[in-house]
Length: 189
Image (cartoon, rainbow, N blue to C red; front, side, top):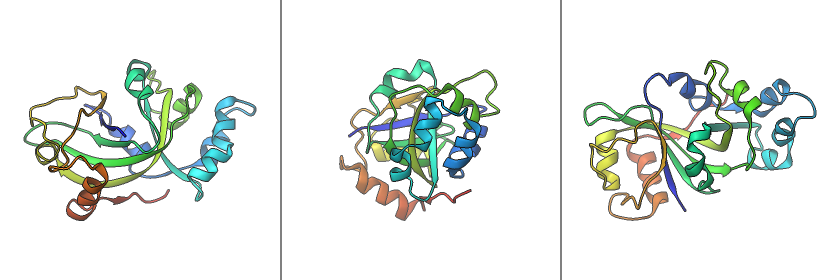
């Protein structure tokens, strides 16, 4: 199992609002995709329905330049999301456990999911239920045994052997975040 960090970088609050602060509805995405398209068929598939029986999901997309770490993303992996990193003010605001990783590209769905991203396309998608809370960048770096000065530079990166407060069990660390940093599942739309 892998743990990834999605560092959003400057100017990406729209990505948070559209895909992490609230769950999306499968039916809304389906309505916006062309009939008969492979992308629409995926959103209508039994895989989506079984993974998200209430019809809501969270999704993250990575650009073509981040395909290598995306290809290493698998079911059950944990992804932590940080809008900013700095010793004095950065934080981790969201995490999710990956439920689906389609091995196809979604350029049309990318335009539906991130309408205001301009010319940028995020064709490599993975799906999960997001949890929201807040842990400072300094405390998170301390917890995983990294230097607080480490900067992922706006990339989607695999964390290399994080310590998780002295244990290598990411799930006990997620429980720690739920208890001590008040992470909880985001509300549905």
